[in-house]
Length: 337
Image (cartoon, rainbow, N blue to C red; front, side, top):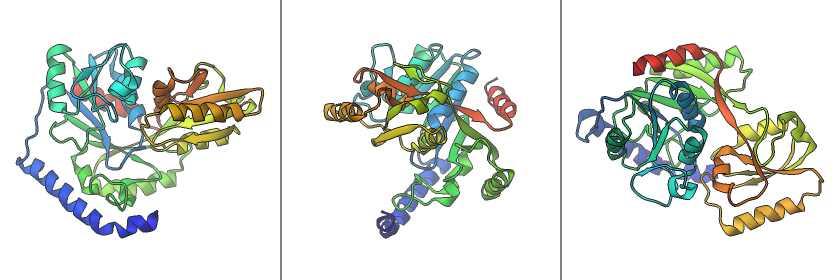
């Protein structure tokens, strides 16, 4: 696969030229950007998937929802509907996308909407919902909206500085694009990341002259869904693990570290599970021989599977700051006030 990507290097050069030209057109005003008076916080990345945008959006929701009328706007990746949708209790993941549905089900004090046309979506929400702050999920490259604060995420062991453009690498645009960001969050760090590793990452990112934060993924102490089991008791079960996310490595490492015995049933990111997929999953689960067995998935996959698989549980996650949490929170709230 790496050799094939290397052969595609000339296409990466062309891709760089196209994305750079597009960015220049936005920078100089050839392509129109729309600004709004309401604070718009953009969360995104330079690479394709797997940097932890969903838990970071959820962190911001928790931070803001009690003090500000908060609206999350997403394009609703992979949904089968078109145009604008304001989520309600009747919507499914196929209609609005898995991440927006997860936000809606998890947080009742906020509004969640999907629209590929972010400018039109924001304008409609301002009229219909009267928000005090917008959170734009995965919109860093959607430059038709000029965000008031932009956050770029990069995974600690897969920094954008060490990557290359598609299709040779995984970058959506050149690392030069980080100049538009207000701050960088290095995500999915080990909770015990060494000071020397932090310094090394700071050195790689220093030339961009951005405020840098470090976060890790914290797993809930027990499963949710059909069965509630404490993490330390999972090793007593034989588990079928189902994932359809971009990068399940952190979850696999977590389960291995807790000596959990599991079989991994892996699907692509944002996978639309077919009836055949469900049948295969149930067959694999039936083949497990233990008297104590569990079907486990991610929270994002759970919203797509909860009505299709009986006795399904999930392991929830949250973003946690390794340090300077108060500084980050203050920066966000000061921006809105």
